[in-house]
Structures are given as C-alpha cells and as structure tokens.
Image (cartoon, chains in turn green, yellow):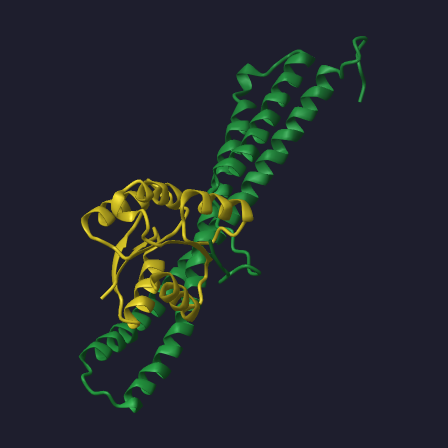
Length: 178
Length: 120
C-alpha cells in the first residue's frame, strides 16, 4: 500500500480497502441470511414435532389426572398402576421441557442473527449511493470507520439485547432452598 | 386442597408444572408473566407461588419483591423455576425473598418433593 506525505494511504488504496470491507459485509450478510433461513426451518420442524408430542402427552395426562380424581376405590393395585403410568408421563414431561427450551434457544439465536443482519445492512448502506463516493483519502477512511463502528455496535447490541436461554446441563434440575 | 400459582411465559412449561402438581392432588392456577401473576395472587389466596425469572412485562424477581410487600404473601413460599443458574442470580433471588431456586428442566419427582417440603 502506498502512502502520501502525511503517512496516510493513497485515496485509491483507501477506496480499495473500503470496497473490500463492503464485500466482506455483503458476503457475511448472505451467509447470515442462509443461517436465519435454516434456523427458521429447524424451528418449524421442532415446533411441529413438539405440538404432536404435546397433544399426545396432554391426552394421557388429562386422562390419568381425571381417573385419579374419579376413582373412589382404594385398591392398592390401581394406585400402583397409576404410579407406573405417571412415571412414564413424568419422564416425558422432562423431555418435553427440553423441546421447549431448545425452541427458546433458537428464538434467541434468530434474534441475534436478525440484529446482526440489520447492522450489516446499515453498514453496507453507508457505502452507497455511488453518487456520494468520497474523493479524498480521509473521506474513504472515515467511511470505512463508520462501517466498522456500525458493525461493532451491532455486535454489542446483540450481546446486550438478546435474551438467550442459558441451559447449563450441569445445573439442570438442581435445587437450592434458602 | 392447596392452591399453587404457576407463572411462566411458556405455555408448555406452565402445562408441565400444572400436570405434575395436579397429578399429586394440588390445585393449580396459571399466569403468563409477573404482572398477571400479581393479579392472580391478589384475586386468589395461593399457598405457594412457582415463577419463572425471564418473562415479559414483569420478571420473576420483581414479582417476588412485589408479593413480599403484600401482607398475605409475606410468608407464603415462593420458588423460582428458571434456566438461570448463576450464583449471582440465586443471591438476588434470596435477597428478594424467594424461598428456593430450581433450575430447568426440572425433574417432576424433585419438584414434588420440594413443593411438599416448603408447604409443610
């Protein structure tokens, strides 16, 4: 890269650097669009499966709770039977929660990807329209800096805003009584 | 029959909690965020409140603080049931007046044990 007397790169080099930045931002935005689409498709499949599981679970759960209430008999055998069915339902209950938590995780990731795409879009817009193309080195550098600032602001924003679901497997199911 | 208020913005989670508690003979009323939980708690005398932390409108810790300022809920047990598991958050829960902290996904048998214990 050639520099002028003030130690700044030439306008041509600065323009090339800014163009490179635009190309990187556009490429990254295209990849994020694909990621967003895949997240949406994964979530749709998961939601559909969860809905089916929930319907089956609800049917069985409602039936067992109703049967427990209606049953006036005190046979130990019936109680044991309910217990066995409940054990299976409790097990399903734990896994259905995981489905729900994964859905929430995907929501949080979608939010992050969308926010980053938005900021990258803003950064790309800073490089257009062509009519306002800078002519001096300082203007090119200023434009590149504005784009980078926009991208960095996007990264900070997603960290601040995205309310991700933190699923810590080690502490899942733990209990603290105060 | 003891009445338990389950507060969570996830319908699936509310349904799971309600199923487990109802199968053990408790009556469960539901709310989908802290603000609605506060309304429900004001309208119905609850023996226990189980709340999520991260919810729109009003989060779980704010709900705990608000409930503790209501005369009827000064000594009613309140459990946080959440994905949050950091010690700092648990300390905040304790300071707010929560009775206990359970991390999702919960084990139904453990939930019932804890509920029985705090209702004793």
